[in-house]
Image (cartoon, rainbow over all chains, first blue to last red; front, top):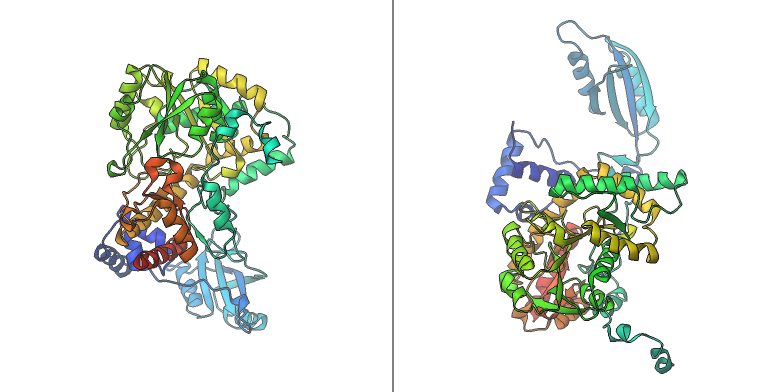
Length: 166
Length: 389
C-alpha cells in the first residue's frame, strides 16, 4: 500500500507517542481534526497501525521484575509449509513475545517472557524442546535492558541549555 | 572604585549597551519550574556519530593547531556541501575559512570591510550582536525597521530610504532571528538589484539555512551577480545542533577572504581542532540527522503557531529558524511588561521583542525548540495568563 506524505508523518509521530491528543496531531500536520481522524481510521482498518502499545520498565515494579530470554532455535523445516508451521506452533504460546525467522547459524529467534528463570526453563524444556521439528535450543537470558525499540530505559540526556540566550 | 575603573575602558566599549537579554536571563535563572521558550539554540544534543568522531580525533592525538583557514579536509567538505545544498561554488584553498562560530565570522567580516565612519545597514528586528559588532569595527550601524504587518520582510524601498554615500554594506539574515522570516528568491533578487545599484557589499548570515520548512532555500550569493559582493556567514550551531562546539565558516571571494584570514591568523590562529574533526563527520554523514531534526521542528512550529493564534496572540507562520514572533499588542502591555509578568505569574520565559530593536516592540520571541509536552504546557499557561489580563 502506498501512503501519502501526511499519512507517513502521522505514523512517525505516533510511533514516538501514541497518546498524543488528536487535536495536537492535527495541528502538527496542518490538517483538520476530521481529516486526521479519517487518516487514523484508515490506518487502523488496514492494519498498517496494528496496535498502540506501551513500553514499561518492569524493573521498577516490585514483584514484577520478570525475566526475558532470547532463544536460538534450530528446526527441521517441513515439506510444503517450510518454517511456517513450526513457527506458528511456537508463537501460539502466550509467553512467547516474538518469533523471527533468521538467516545464519540457527532458524528461529524466539523471545520469551516469564516471571522467573525456572518458569522460562520449564517452558523451554517442556514445551519448546519437545516439539517434533525442534532440533536444538540455545537460551540467552537478558541481564539488563538499556534500549528497547528505540527507547533508552535509563533517563536520557537532560536539557543542559541556559534559560535565556540570544 | 567604579569611577576609576571606567577611565581604563575604551570609549567605544563604554558606549556599547549591554544586551537587554541579560537582565531577563538573571530573573529566569533565579526561578524554579520555569518553562523556557527563551533559548536560542536547538533542544537536540549533537548526533552521536559527530561526538564519536570528535572523541576519536582526541584518542588519536589530533590536538595540535590546524592551518589558519581550518583543516583542508573540512574546507573541502564545506565546499561540497555548499555546492550540493545551495548550488554555490567556493574554492576550498582560497575562498573558505573555518571560524569560531558564525559570531566570529561576522566579526571578521565587519572588521575586514569597515573604515571608520562607514555605515552598515542592519535589518531590525535582528540578532542582538549585529549593531555592537559594527560599532566595534569602527562603523555606524544604521537600522532598517521591518514591519510586523508585512511579516517582517525586508523590502528594497526600505533600504533605499536610508542609503547614504557612506553606506558600505548590508547585513542580511534569512531565516531571521527573532522573526523566523525567510526571504524567497524573488525577494532576494529585488534586494540584490538595490545592492548592485548602490555598489554595496552584503554580509549574509545564513546560520539558519538548514532550518526552512516550506520552500526550497535560496542562498543570497546564488542570486545572479551577488557572489562577488557577498560574504556568506554560516556554521554548524543551529542546523547540526552543535552550538557549544563553536564552529562556523565564512565563504567569500578571494580578496575578501584574504583580508579576513589576516585578522583571523593574528587573533584566533585557528578554530578548535577537535571541533573541526566533528564537523567533518557532520558534513559527511549528518544529513539524515539534520533532516530528522528539521521535520521535528516543523511539526512543533505548526502546532505552536496555530495554538498561539487560537489563544489570541496573532502570529504569522514563520518559514524558518525555530522562533515564533507573536504580536502582543492586543494585550496593551509593552513587550517587556508582557514577558516579565508572564515569567513571574506563569513561569514561562519568552524574550521581549524590544531586545531585538525598536521594531520588535509589541512582539515577543518564543523558541519552539522545546519538547512538545513543554510547548503544550506553555500554551496552557499563556492562555491562563491572557484570560486574566
